[in-house]
Image 1 (tube, rainbow over the protein chains, first blue to last red):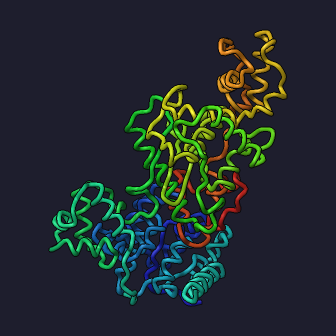
Image 2 (cartoon, rainbow over the protein chains, first blue to last red; image 1 turned 30 degrees about the vertical axis):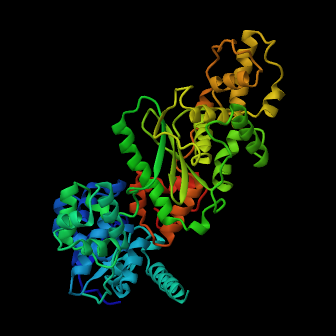
Image 3 (spheres, helix red, strand yellow; image 1 turned 90 degrees about the horizontal axis):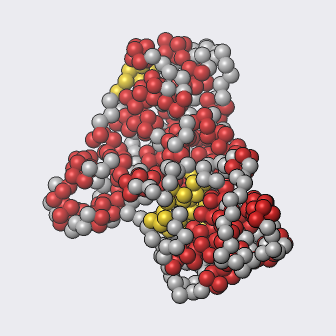
Length: 169
Length: 370
């Protein structure tokens, strides 16, 4: 499997899973990791009882983007689906939607995946397992099902099928 | 950037309309706030045919000092829903703040549940009672429901299930501020009762039955926005609600099995009061007044000092929310209609407590809840 050379956008679900699997340093050393300020706040403060990455270390490992109120409003005006997401997940998509370069996004919540699929970005979605496999890293702790490539593809397939059925109805 | 079809978030127009009506503004006046040329533009935004621009949303947030999410958050009630709070010594500000939190839970359920899948009948059921109805009739209706809906030997135990499954009323056990016992809430498409799960079981059950009455008589006797839980008098509707609740929780036919009360000495009566109150899961005070209403005790009979209920009885606190509510949440997470982190924030619990909450209601937790 080839290493993904595009910037990898991460939300805090992906980051905390990676930290919990003992794979954070490996991921940070091999990829161009990027995120948004809200995710940084979550990752560096233990939001919802998750692992904490020291702020300075985080800034050294991850490029952090600001999301302005205006940018958020613009995207929210067009995408009702952003309302299903938590603030970090939402801002990550607001940032991603405005980019015109290549990127991939790792956000393992089904609502985040659904947002990506329904907006035409399913090819940009990656699992934590895929990212780690590509650099030949085996996590110390087994990844949860929803961090695997098989699970991600099954979820994408289901969302696509559900949408097709909706259109037929 | 990927080619994404331009869409319009329909919620924004609806929220703009609600905000304008709340503030009594014409479309022309709102056009000035937004900095757009005419009232027709406001009309098209409200109608969902023109997206609102970022600078217009910014102007709105500044002018009305609203949260930026006011316009886009599907999980909150804006300009809709009527609440009737049962409380004691709770400030108006505290009630308002709590109502906003409660509104989020109800909006979450409404947004995420398919109306076709909600339990209970599609139509609203009501009681044929009004303010001039007698207390006897209100009590008879309470008793009738226990028979018609087969509520068994301890009606309090079955009441939440009957309200949800047979009447389509969402029952939520919630953590509320001290002083807030619960509330009845009516939305256009949904009725709900909230009960402070940290109250003792007797009070909790009485509140639930009392609010059940308000839901069933809302059209003929709309309850007040705030009512005092310690007030045994109150309006006619409140008195009828209390009569209904006591009869529903302690039907005559079940109370009769506990024998004659008039001939008991004080010690014996106090002991039996404790036993019977615990059996029906009501307070001793509620039992006393029920016995008086049934003329099993004289009006002049003293309210006895009765041994406190056992610690085990008092510790019987139900898990937060309800099985129906958590089933909807679980399905919505699996369908990608809401993210797990968003759920945790709305329910005001950490992510790692979510799995336990699903388990407490015997609802399978989605795989992403970890």
